[in-house]
Image 1 (cartoon, rainbow, N blue to C red):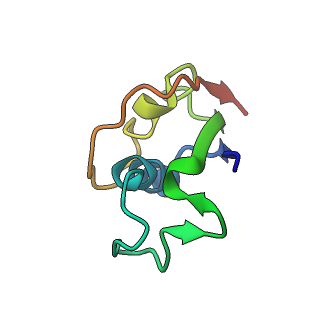
Image 2: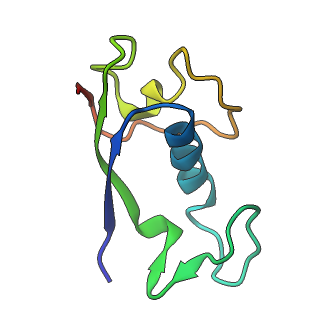
Length: 94
């Protein structure tokens, strides 16, 4: 099965939580319980199949940063649950 390609519009707290969660839980077993998720498998897709391919924000503190850095840029204040390695996605203005 292929990947689920996701573009983020607005790199705020919700995006930060989503991206951190995908990174943190990407290698869970199919039958493992994950807080906040009803299922770790949806059809033939798994958490590790989610791929962030683009990101847009209007805040100049985030534009130009790798998405992994932008999710922690102010004014975001989401609790950090894990470090996210560079994703190779540069936040674009918009």
